[in-house]
Amino acid sequence: MVQDGLSEIKNVIGDVHESVNFINQNEARLNSFSDIVQQLQLPDRKLILDCKTRWNSTFEMLLIAIKFKEVFSRLKERESHYECCPSHEDWEKVEKVYEILKVFNSATKIISENNYPTSNLFLNEVYCVKVLLDKRMNDENEFVQAMVRKMKSKFDKYWGECNLLMSIAAILDPRCKMRVTEFCFPRMYPDREVKENIAKVRDALYEIYDEYAREYQFGNEHSAETQVHDNGISGMNIEASSSGWFEFANYVKSVETAQPQQSDLDVYLAKGYFICEGDSTKFHALECASITLWRRLVSESSWSEEEEQSGKEPEMHGSHRHVWSPMMDNAN
Image 1 (cartoon, rainbow, N blue to C red):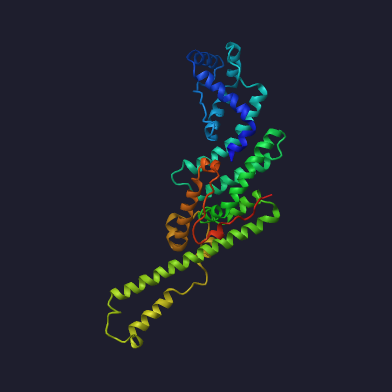
Image 2: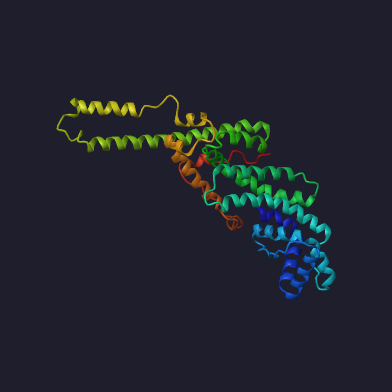
């Protein structure tokens, strides 16, 4: 997605790349560059040469190069063979591109560098990216508009495929709950779609909870039956139809598995925010669902840019494929 957008300014970024390469490949040029850095009293930093197929390395290259843009200009005065020095106008473009890449880089680090990325961070970072793209679609610079248009086209495609997943996983974080959708969605979607999208997330959340609740209930019933058998109740030589123990076991089972008037999900959403970690054990079905969703979310987020460029689509698995279908084809 980002790489597609950068193609709109590949010539300017190419000049920065060639400038860094021109300096790094010659010891005398490196010394000249360092002398100018000291004269301008700038912090001494090693120039980074990017990998052209990885936008995050391009971001790192631009991060350092922008700080030394004056140094590049002065080096051109000393080096007659230095023909790829970016102009003043080029550096202005580079700085605008850098500001956009900075938001993407922040979002990527949350996902890829955290050993235990939490779902609320996923959704909030996606929200930041979408707000940025929507805002820059009307940028005064045509090259920025063209770049963002390419990024947004692919962003909308993949956001539509995973927005329910990220939203539900964020809601299952007790620090977020439904407030995270109430905060993000009005900033991400037109007014007419906000309530509809929040309702879709809530409906999908309850659908998933109901399935996990049924599975958890079935597990409890099976465990209770096993315990009765181990206690010797079922091993007594008494006709089942006339056994007091049999009738009592059925009574206990009916009481233990009776549906509460308010589900665990209702209780969870109604409770205050920032629930301490110990309270999570009270919501067994929700705990199982959240673990599954977080694992799924991390798996989706590990989908690499190489796979994107190859045209490979992230696959959707499991009985809730329809739950992960797009909320909308395009947010605008």
